[in-house]
Length: 107
Image (cartoon, rainbow, N blue to C red):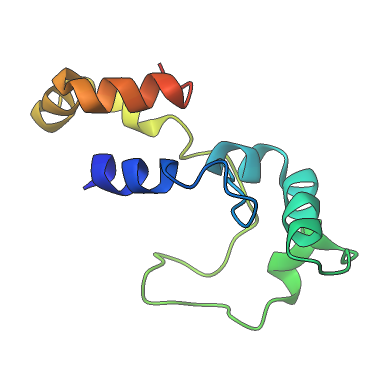
């Protein structure tokens, strides 16, 4: 599914109404990336973006294991830790997956 979703998204990468945001950038450079997103959609910059988790009205969600947390990079690159996984091995052997990972600078 990842290959299909990413391939479909790549078709629009140069479209003027599409902003491509890497998860890693959103996490590691949150303030700068959010500023870029807000400018792209024509919204005013918001002060206090870095502590959004303290002011959000959504505190819990069924998709989360715990209450809302500040942004952190714990999950970045976690997929690489699964090198012994048969699923990951099959994925990395897929030429389309390899091509997309290279194009997106993951390998």
